[in-house]
Length: 283
Image 1 (cartoon, rainbow, N blue to C red):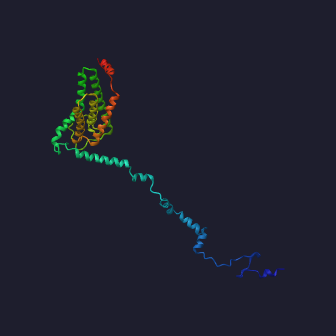
Image 2 (cartoon, rainbow, N blue to C red):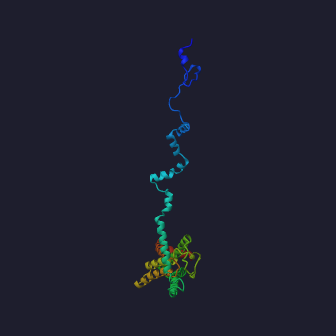
Image 3 (cartoon, rainbow, N blue to C red):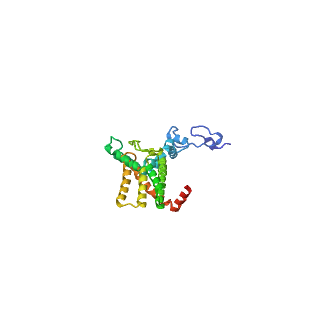
């Protein structure tokens, strides 16, 4: 016998219930399947997840580095900063080089016969010859040969050693630095060698400074002669710039180098005993 409840059961739309089971229907409004919210729910995400996914887009990731760097207040990379900000030492050296070239060109008033002081050029060339290495080497060797005292031979021998040392050191520095002579120079110098096409340092300036200190230290000279020695040293260096042979820095460095070469000659000084031993071997 069927229960009366079974006869009255069924759906509200009149469809029968199969198997005697109940189906619950939502009492809310029907869902609009074409709404954006429904599309987001179909994709298994909510608005927060969508915003996170948008933040991870390729365009945003591509610009994230610059935006982060600007937000944190960081400047350009360090290597870019180095390229954009040259060192103070480099700027100073470039400025000194430009001043050196400008001043040397302004002072080369005897560079050629057509220069403003072209008439003084023969006198400057005579001073140039007085500071050349060949006359000094020949004079020191002749004085050594003609000297009849051990003290005189000792002094002349060490002067000859200093002159040879000067030629070697100046040749090495010129070959290493390889600074060309000024463009306005005329290559009409007396007895030049292969390294003489280079300008730094001035061999005349090194030789004048070294020989000047040597003469003042080891020769007994009156006061006027000592003044003449100092004047000769200065004129030799000045003639190198006036003739356009060297730049100003070539001469200044040459004076300093010659001053130091004399100290080296004093360290390597040959004593009378050493001189007698050398003369005995030569005989």
